[in-house]
Length: 133
Image 1 (cartoon, rainbow, N blue to C red):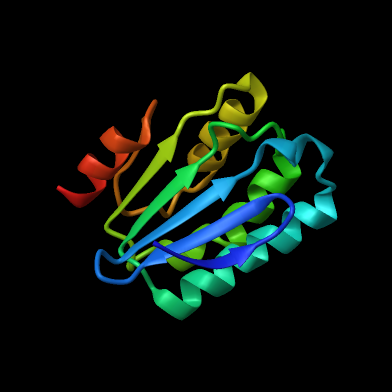
Image 2 (cartoon, helix red, strand yellow):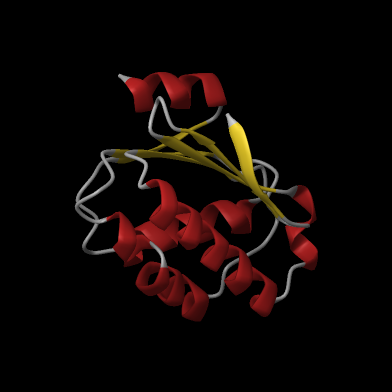
């Protein structure tokens, strides 16, 4: 994996050979403002536009940011639509924080156009195995 973006709240890595983008939300996201959340989501979108990976692994196990319903809808409109017709699989590593986990699940429920399977896993090894199978 090659690191392509890093901020106070987020790290993005790419494995071009496996067509995999890994999104890691950091533990200090509880201090993230809505504006900072948007900035980081835009970074994910720009990275996706550049690499067009077929697989996405989102690690939210340490995330502690609860995405508001308004921002959940915004995330679907400004990021997830890019994945439709392009992504084969998406996996999430589950959060230890109830509200972060709930936010991720609600964002996926909001995404009515998603045309690829998405699953939640407790560990990265299982998530990668499923993504690459």
